[in-house]
Structures are given as C-alpha cells and as structure tokens.
Length: 125
Image 1 (tube, rainbow, N blue to C red):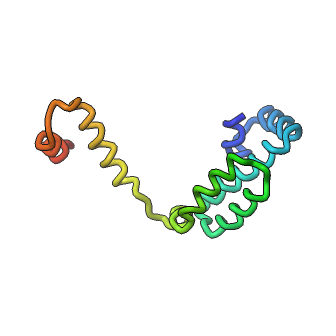
Image 2 (cartoon, rainbow, N blue to C red):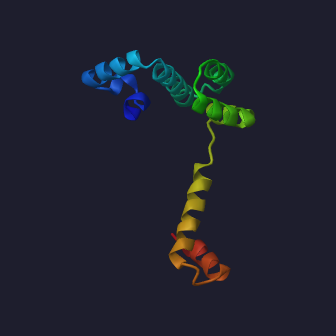
Image 3 (cartoon, one colour):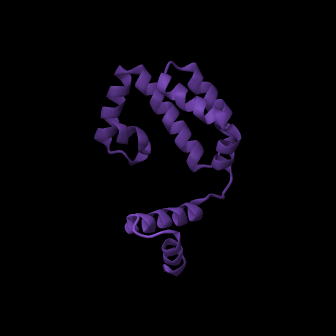
C-alpha cells in the first residue's frame, strides 16, 4: 500500500491502480492521506514551495492526527521549508562530507584522538 501511495500514479501497473482504487474507495481517511501525500510530492518535485500554506490548511481540515503532527512541525520552520521547496540550492555536498567524516571516525572505534582523525580526513581521497 505504501509503495502504491508514494509512487507516481502513471508508474503503477493497471492491477496495482485497480487495487489501490478499491482500497481508497473503502477508506476515506486513506484516500485523504493519499491526496495530501501526492500533493506534497508534486510540490517537492516541481519546486512549488509557495503552495505550502494552502497544503498546510488542507491538511488541518482533515481528521488525520498523524498528518497534523507533521504539519505542526513544518509550520514551526515554515520559512526554511518554503525555501527548501523553492530554491535550487541544497546542502548535499556538506552532508556528504559529514557522512564521510563520521564513517572515518567509526572505523577508528575510539582508538585514536582528534589528531589521527584530522590526518585521515585531510589525506583521504
């Protein structure tokens, strides 16, 4: 079910589409959730952060407590989320370096101090 909801509708097989329609017809909460998830995915992939306030309002109107929690978290940092959904820049390079440094640190298992970690980070390819 989760894969069906998170996939683009046009990528689902005909059988999967029919099964998803049958499930959504019997569960209005899941149907509403599917609409919100797909709307957010469209906003994310098309960089339409300006639609976030309308999406948050639509989520709050439905009786989906778990989505209300997500909406409240997004609302606390609304400007940053809108920027992340709109602007072309991201921090993936920095996150990659942080991930690499953490991996090097884990490999050492606390056997050496900061000096060795520094050398490994600076000399690593």
